[in-house]
Image (cartoon, rainbow, N blue to C red):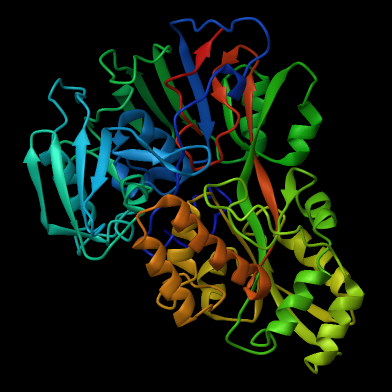
Amino acid sequence: MHERFPGLRRRGFLAATTGAAALTLVGCGGGTDDKADSGDGDTPKRGGRLRAAFAGGGASETLDPHLANLFADVARAKALYDKLADYGDDLSAEPRLATKWEADKTLARWQVTLREATFHDGRPVTAEDVLYSYRRIADPKQTFRAKASLEPIDLDASRATGERSIEFVLKRPTAEFPNVLAAFGAYIVPSGAKDFDKQPIGSGPFRFVSFAPGRSAVFRRHDAYWDGAPHLDELEFVVANEESARVNALLGGQIEYAHELNPTTARAHEGKGQIEIVRLRNSAMQAFCMKTDRAPFDDKRVREAFFLIADRQELVDGALSGAGVVGNDLFGKGYEYYAADLPQRAQDLDRARALLKQAGAEKLKVGLNTSAVAAGFTEAAGIFRDQAAKAGVTIDVRMGSKDSYWSDILDNGTLCCYRSGAMPIEAHISQRLLTDSTTNATKWRHKDFDALYQQAQSTRDKTERAAVYERMQRRLYAEGGFLVWGFADWILGTARNVRGVETKAPANSLDWARFDKVWLA
């Protein structure tokens, strides 16, 4: 990871968590209502090769699933491998290789039962494979993606209790332990597996054929896949770093699936009949991040004023070209535990001016760090600067380097542009909003807030737990450091004969970039 941070680099925004962090993926599919199709060809048809284009990572690319950082890495990993659980469309954990999980009274010991599944070489997936995979990820000498997410597990004390059963011993009560099983990069590999680029063996829907780093990877249907053999005979991932190259290849019939298109491209081609445009809603939080530990944002009246300065619809229309929805200063719109009942905040410049006057900040001047590191960042900064001027606030927009933006803004400055991919609300809180969170960009440090998180993690009853999360979100809504102005669509393009692409799966979820349920009509 170049960023230490839940940023997205332009070439593949994975929701990162910490330095050696985890990403976020989603859940198993609904019916055909949730899929992109166009009338005929709705009965799945077997056969054919689908070619999917992603931005890549050059000659350093690997098929080691525990190193997956870019979107291309994750798409390849989920074709070859499985996790014990994965994130559904609402970012709640759904069983995959695990069929069930049960906690004891303390919520610090969990029994996990595996389904009957086989690796590509015919060996069964066992508890020993799971423990090997997790211990490999947690190796202190390595920086594997899911290491931080697996931190709650005491892997020395955890053990296999049968061929397909595991007792996980945790370091503390963890009600949301299924989120750990679903963590970005927490793929299960065969015990002892080391060489992943020559002949990788997983339990996923496709088996390995060939791999040329930075160019192409070819996989073939795994007929014995536990969730049903894929419809496609073959799947090829091709690397095309420029969006224009992906679009032209799609229009020219060289590929059937193009990942990560921009809103302008989508508008130009939507409904024209040449290609299909798929919009994955609520995929990327868009925000301004206020540092709550330093002036002027150490005064909650100033933070509230900034919440009221924002014209969110203007930001969505201008910075996202309309490809998104307005936010309400909370992460996770549409996700499990989201506090959807809070009133939608609207621009109120009179109230903003009054709050600034109370705080002694009438002629406030503040720097806003931005960068071309992510789509819409520089546009959002300019729009917000103009909105703030109407409340008497002078914003100095400062352009930062694309290479160091995420590491720089973690500790420096007072106000910055920020975005994040999908992850559970619980993960967002634990990774970004606790006193000791390593990617706490807003410097939100409150012992009573930390205590509420621990209370939620110690609460077995889900309704009671949801009430605790709502209390935490009400506090953030009133005085937090994230001014969440929007949620961007994640945009894909497909050929007209592609069916079965999920349309309700946010980027980073199980059904995003998932090809075992896709077919060519």
